[in-house]
Image 1 (tube, one colour):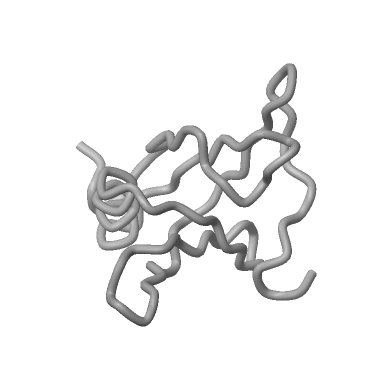
Image 2 (spheres, rainbow, N blue to C red):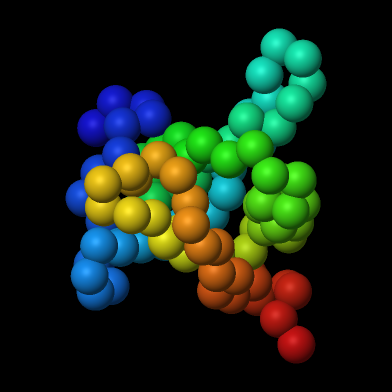
Length: 95
């Protein structure tokens, strides 16, 4: 897979599926506006688009704290997150 290419995702049910991994980067456009994020899925990096400030804050937290997340997408549009689930933190952050 090429960087940014979206692979097959794990089916949930109906028209949605999910990717699990860790956020490896936040993407901003030339004006400094949030544009999306990069997710490492087993050593392969994929780009997801988002413009919402709430998603920016959530993925920034996951990125800074190295929290594993699940990104739920519609099968018809695999580059846009419809839901983000914080899965687990690495050992030092777990209580």
